[in-house]
Image (cartoon, rainbow, N blue to C red; front, top):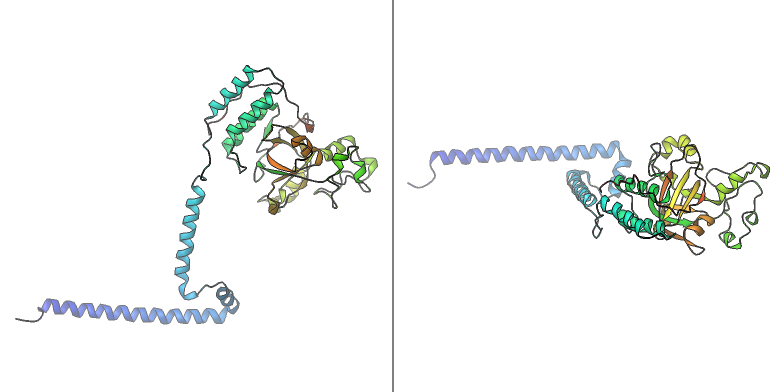
Length: 330
């Protein structure tokens, strides 16, 4: 007997009915989509024009969303993956042992600086980048043990966007009304950078020449620039942060040669497009790297000095003190 059995025939009828219902539903949804799109265009013509300018079709919102979600997932994977070619830092206890070995094997006045340079190579990556909290903690203990200055990446809850970056040469700042470049130094080399046309972030150091003290003179001579303008909470906490950062002492260490300076923050910058993260006065830059030093990698930490006992200026360190240096494993 040819043809389909009754059960198969009934099945085909059910399938056809289901297809008709699905098609009817699809048509209703399509009509609804057109209605919603037209209603949106009438109520929000500017938004419709903006979306069209961006190449976004309201009828394909789900497709656009899927692309965005996919791109976000890929970005997350890239951010969480370690940078290609980045060297693995050695265990902290190895760094401590090397510090002690170098210190015990030589009595040269340059031994502490050699120790610092070698330890920096072990503790931080070659190219500047934001450091992890563990890396910063290690450096804090190295600086205190080798240089003898208690410096902190985070002080009183404040932290810069990066503590390891490039420093660039800055000009002299006007210290009081009527100040001129010639008044800043008798060393012609120190005057070559010139004087900034505008004032620093905190204005004049003194309201008049009569009120300009020796301490303020040293503050301008050894001043630093940090990017307070890019702090995520600068706009919200600006009054407090402005006072907190004014003349705040920082330890700046040249990671290439070990030279170190304690400077006072007296200006805000540099601009991000310069590729620099910090700035230094002509005197700061000269001590860090010489008269031709215009840009280089440094570590910059806040000086933890509540009693104001650490003077600003060059840091001459020639004694090792490795007691209590117990680096954190990275």
